[in-house]
Length: 329
Image 1: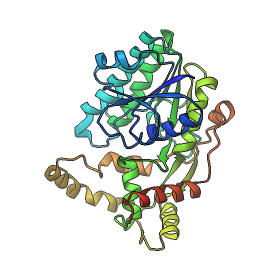
Image 2: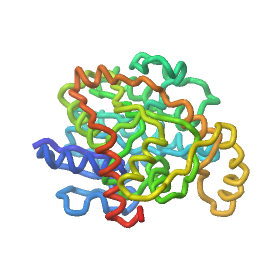
Image 3: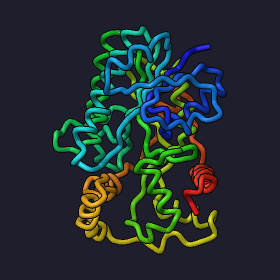
């Protein structure tokens, strides 16, 4: 029975990896970063205190580990947090790679993002050979994921066997501490986003993503990056699905793009008062309106057996999960 280590194990992807790895009879070790164990409850996992940004804390954690799923990342689109973003997504990734190499890990699955690629032209298929972002003025999160991937590829040259997963927008159940993307789904379902720009994105079910990532342990090629997507849909369509399930109106309509920018000053002032990252930023708006429309995931389908389920099933299960937890009323 292989011992698999999950970084970011209390997060959305980590939580679902625990469930799928359990089904596949892996032994599981989790890094306890923040004391939040809700994702582990009821599962047979080993938990060790640590932090990927603290290199020395990783030495005992990586002992006897055969497979690493590196999901830990800071998703933040507020540029005031650029140093923290790079600390986690770049320096943290380097620490994980070095610890994996030192411990003789057999396989590392690195979770990057489609945001690591230049988006334009968004009408053309997004494939694995799309150029990685290298503009220092780019969205800090996007640049950090691109730079993290470059570090991973450097370690491949040193003998570390790594396959890289690029998910699109991750949705689905079993998210016990919703980050920016999933919290906005909760807000939408609760009627807190009465109007939205007429934008769309490619969405992948977190459970399908995890199945595909585990498949990459045995089937993924060293140094190969795999784009793992689902279906492109408008946010307004997701609202329709929520309305059918909840039996109430959650979205009144769509608005022109420029109207979205009018809320930026308010969001900035609110963040100063609450001392929390801004949800609405120029980078948030850029990300929302430039989702690639054609994400075939051909390589992941052919080499890893990626088989995404319909978005309708995903949204239903996601809403049901948050209803049970009391986050969607």
